[in-house]
Length: 281
Image (cartoon, rainbow, N blue to C red; front, side):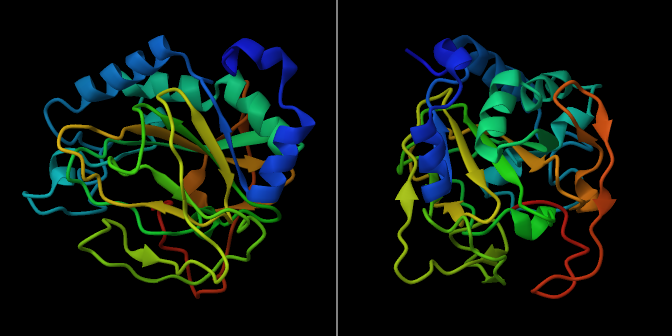
């Protein structure tokens, strides 16, 4: 029985305890195969002519890729829910505010979640990975931390560059990143894996949703497969009790679609001035 079929039961005490102990939780089969196919086809159709003005990362002027880089053709799409003029816009808003995701987040947070961000990663064959990082370095949620809902749109394993999570790092403070290795990773920030911790590959089926909090160190390696994408729809959330959020993530939404106001995070952080940061890498 899939997660969607047992939704009324919500999470068990054991599942919630696992999340608080390890920092992550996988909701198996939360999104149905039919829904996954619709998401995949909608985004692939949107990207059929290359980067989309105002939507794709490179077309927004945030990043430049060499023409030989697979991500030159398939850069990630940032905040697609803010683009009702494109087919991916309403679809992204629908799944960012999907009640199955909201209910799971509520059980994990122990309070109402508020939606802050949507992204879509294509990660075609040969694409570099994301270096290890913490999401709350970018969202700057206070008090508390953000949380990700990472929807697998393809089956994910180590060969096609699945997510790697470092369990038990959920209570770490925000750490200061160093420069990443650009031959392996398309993002700039790198965190060392703390002593005594290990990287765990998330072996996921399409439709599984990986939840993890904003302090958990995570990343991914290159897609070394010959012909397999590793697509994912990723949304970020904040707890309703938080006071501050970076302005890049506004407007914020309740799961009924109503906008929520939070104080804009100001000043620097433990790594200096982070005002210019535009999103989790």
